[in-house]
Length: 112
Ligand code: 5GP
Ligand code: ZN
Image (cartoon, rainbow, N blue to C red; front, side, top):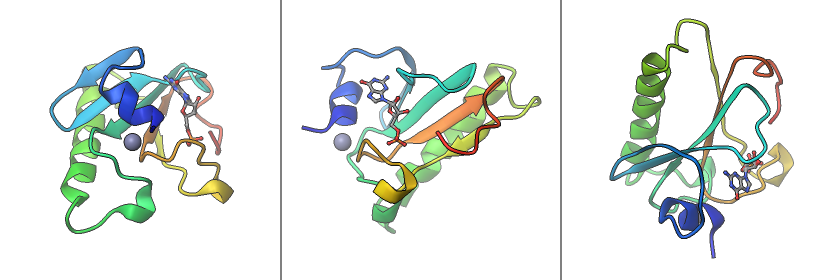
């Protein structure tokens, strides 16, 4: 069982911010900044280390969605940070690719 696959399928509840056929965006359960969203592909990709020519369009779409949401929410001009922890040593705890999007107070933390 993969926690984020279950969240994307809505089998486990989350605060959904945005969804389309490829991407699911929800608020982190333990926010480290005023804004702390997680952007995940609906397709299971374990981490950034598993990005390939076959699935990289999904990753590109994640970044398109991040830019769109940050503009829509009026955050883009103030600044935001995107982080992906890849592997245990980098602090990855959920092994389904995700991008932390941080903004506001707290976003200066280098590690999430
Ligand atoms: P990682 O440490 O893998 O980079 O990030 C995993 C993130 O997922 C953490 O920031 C953690 O707070 C968040 N998280 C873990 N379990 C849940 C959950 O059940 N729901 C939500 N919304 N976030 C979760
Ligand atoms: Zn998964």
